[in-house]
Length: 162
Image (cartoon, rainbow, N blue to C red; front, side, top):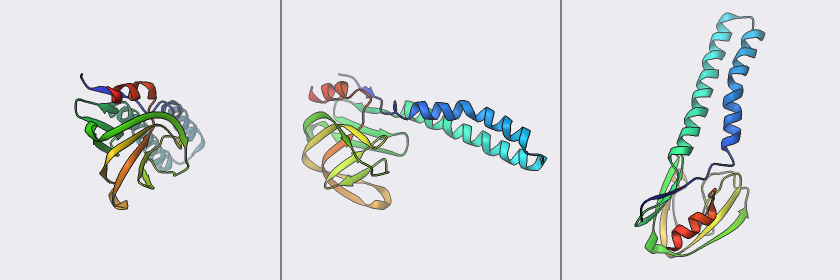
């Protein structure tokens, strides 16, 4: 069994692409409207930096996907975070939509690590032993469940049940 990767960004990628495609039009419009050269130059730099950040985010979402290897489930969100869960610690995995409005890409709620995309998760993992999860400034938490979003939850569930 080799590494299997699973995307999680299908809901947000279209919005990023729209903004990336519209950025040149925004730069052109600003160039036509703003009469001062110095301000146009500053706004051009900001527009180009914005386009670079959007392109970087798209690439990171493509490159850093969730994955399952021989020993671990890797949960990622671009370069923002990466959690490694031992497969031996997984008791049960199910598919099911959950909606929340935590407004964070990662949170711990009642012992559950929630990794939501657009306020939703669709894969639930029950752990047979608590795992320590570091949320950075929000501290280290022990979790017994994990909920996360995957573009193809059936494939994730199948990979984790093997």
